[in-house]
Amino acid sequence: MGGGAVNRVAITGLGMITPLGTSAPECWANMLAGRSGVRRITRFSTDGLKTKIGGELPDRYYEMEAAEFPKRFMAQTNSTVRLAFLCAREAMADAGFSLEGRDPHRVAVITGSGVSDFAQWRQYGDGKEVPQYVIIRQMANAIAAWITIRFKLKGPSYNIATACASGAFAAAAGLDYIRYGRGDAALVVGADMLLTPESIFGFNQLMALSEQNDSPETASCPFDRRRSGFVLSNGSGALLLENMETARRRGARIYAELSGAGICSEAYNIVAPEPSGIGIAQCMAMALADGRVPPERIGYISAHGTSTQQNDAEETAGIKRLFGERARSIPVSSQKSMIGHTIGGAGAIECAVTALSLYHRKITPTINYAVPDPACDLDYVPNQCRDAPGLEAAISNSFGFGGHNCALVLERVR
Image 1: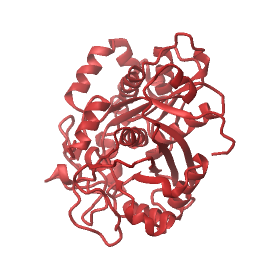
Image 2: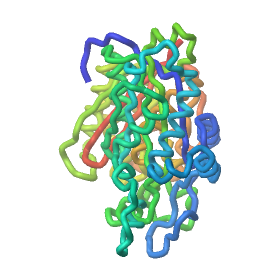
Image 3: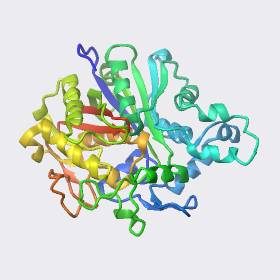
Image 4: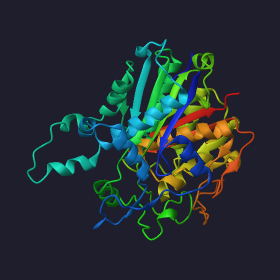
């Protein structure tokens, strides 16, 4: 990412909407309790699909959506835009962030979303007239644009699309925006609403999804020998990033410091990570160097941990390659075991959870872990959360289709 840091970057606001809740506190509490948000799909027919399970958002979310948005806005936006906005609003409120006394041109909005909403295209078939707002509904940048309009934020705004790592890439961009003095704050949001028949069919074609339909709650089992594919989910995470000095001056609560980011491309395969884990190790090493954090200070890794055979084994290999024998003493856990894979939302959600882990000194578990795999032989915090009284620094990993790797380093703030 680059050296010569000027400003430290604080995480002062969090938002989360996942299958486990409609707010960051609710999602965090359910993760600590080791609950699963994966269920049989009820919001659309799964007839003809091999996978019939997923992480649907709670009914309360749709009540929030109906209460918040007027009919015209619903027509102008797709479901991912609306999800991202509601999550961003929580992060802003949680931070107590206001434009009063600030230059709105120095506040960025950076979003991460893997794919535009597939479901919208169904209505255009069979000779039906194309709706009035088709262009603005399908624009990937509309996610960031609508947030700027609603909150009157006039700094740079854009969307990053790096598949499953999109939310983490957005956080890395926000870090650099503040760190090198281009702005004072950044609202970072990762979101996707890809739990649709079209997405399930496509991922089934790639043999990427679990087909464990008879026991949805246990289908996502990262690092367990029985893992058979990821579980597709809807979800969003948001972070309000601020210049550390400014945040302290206004008395903001600081969950953690976002210290460094590592980004690299594996240049190996369009859907699979390189088997030795060298790209994953390199990405984490770059993040540590960028944040000037020594490897021995890392006390937790929030894993990408998708519950696929390849990804989990290769992430394990990458961790061991970087940390050597010490890898076995570092707790590693996957929130995807509880909420499934939210694609563009995953990196932001997992960064938010890592910040909460540092703030509360508690580590969320990897649930559904029962059968060890010789290829996955680290401490995966099985099935129960864990107190971490000495936790000072952590890594959050995100790896996307296309070989897009991103690791974020966070530190506890005293």
